[in-house]
Image (cartoon, rainbow, N blue to C red; front, side, top):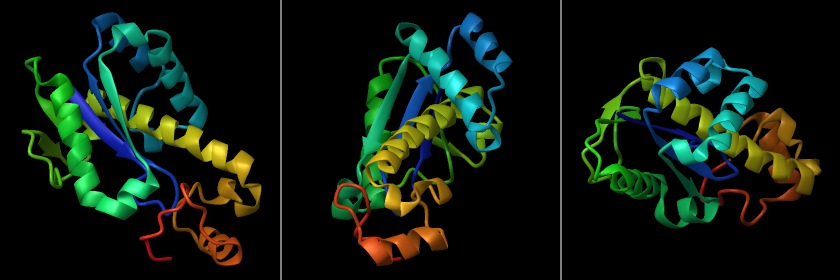
Length: 186
């Protein structure tokens, strides 16, 4: 099967990442389970990074696709349209393979592809948990770049999300083009 999950949907800054990944081989499946795979929100950053590095080191043996939706696209098209496009792209990547495709959530937004939604899918399907980890690590890497480029925004305290300190930094320094979502209210 194929699992899909995202990271960064509700943030005020940074991209949203969607990852679709097919069930890995038995050998890789056992290895990533032994590395502690579960829902990315229940893992420490170093644990997620370990799994990400494992997949990256065997990237030719994993069938996956990453969809990065930058803040400008979210501002221009809206979140639902961006979701739909990304989900359709992921489906098209896997459509020639007979796979059940599971997306974590309760809607496929504007996607036209036959994707099944399951609430809390990252707790029920290894593939969705793996997609969750990859999406979260990719988003964390992007936020790390922001920390280096714009340290005054105190990214380590909010990671781009809508915490009070982030809103205060936006009010103090303004929104950064290409980093912040201008269509989102603070």
